[in-house]
Length: 417
Length: 156
Image (tube, chains in turn yellow, purple):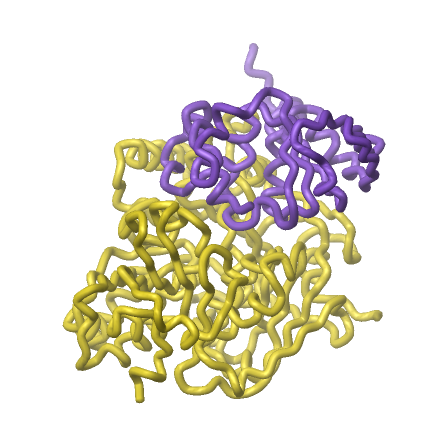
């Protein structure tokens, strides 16, 4: 093995040294994102005795977890961050319900190929869909980045995931990534950078690739990446962004895994771990109290449209509430313009403001003990969406829409036929 | 053991660690916060701390007096966060051989672990830079020292 991986190239670029796998390098950060936990980050920043942010233009803040505030303490956290942002001159501050950080950053042109992006949120891996090296860090580390502009990184090994074949009807990229996590396990890519390659990935939209990179962390990965192509360039170009494209050398991966998705069927992750994956039709006796369409994983226009295509002319089951949370204001507006929102609401959906919604059990749409949800979100841990006695199943937008119609977990092909 | 079990998301609007810590592990063990004692060591299996980047997960355990976590493996963000808040984390393939009530002696510099139940294990010690962070009680203290000389003299 002689070639250099994407991770090596990205961390070499950011650290200014020739980074070998396993090395610990100190790298300069190009972009640092925080959401509501900026309240904790700002406390740590002050505790360190730091006085100014190293480069306020490289810090982006987004309120998405509890926006608008649902508790007095959430409101106080928001206020603290607002005051801090003002003091420090942070201008890229999306605080009025623009949407989920991982959707807002690419939409607003902050994400660039080849750059090193850190976020105090584990799903920061999402930006790998644009060829960035993006990873989640904690609040204290973020405070260190705000103070110094740099952070230590271990150069990760690479897991190359080759995905070939054409996605069958009823399947989406969510089914592919759930299948992959089921095969590899929740720690199957621990500390690795996962490279998604192959014909199936080439055929995916940028939104679909974001789903794959978003969930890389659910198999333990440090980062996930889809290499830039014309679709990536078009998306970034339309947002006034761009960057330096980095590609892995052919023989640079330490681990390889292959999948052929031409025979794939809709997948569901059953409670209480993301790697507990089964075909949707094996769970058809599970009744559903709440169906959730949204999150940084699957709240984009493509996802809302997929659900609407299935719900058109149908009604959500009387036993089920369908909660739709658009990933961003732009997503919501476009879904209004093209009639998607109308279709969803006519079918009986509750539509909330853009944000994280019920995903992490912090804002709206919580579950009671004994209730079951099927959600397009990314984690089904015990207690994630409310009561620890509730159960969460993870699935694609099509499967969630089909399950909302029947009131039980349903393979969407059953309804689409 | 994931981050949402260590500290559920529904409590994360509370930034006061001592009251937040009362909810640690409550979804699987409502008595955890009351029963855990200063100096206790948590022993775990694979992928400890998987899930969210919430630093409150290691912070609440440290707040309750947990002295170290010994696990077969850790999820990477939790691992970094634990070091950064000054909570020692030890990767030990034989963690399952530790029993409830054992006394454990850990030498982070030498990379060795001994238990009263007879387990002797070695682990690769952390790079010196990270050991230094642990010795100083976390990244905040480590950076305090580093940032101090850069600051202008405010005295005069």
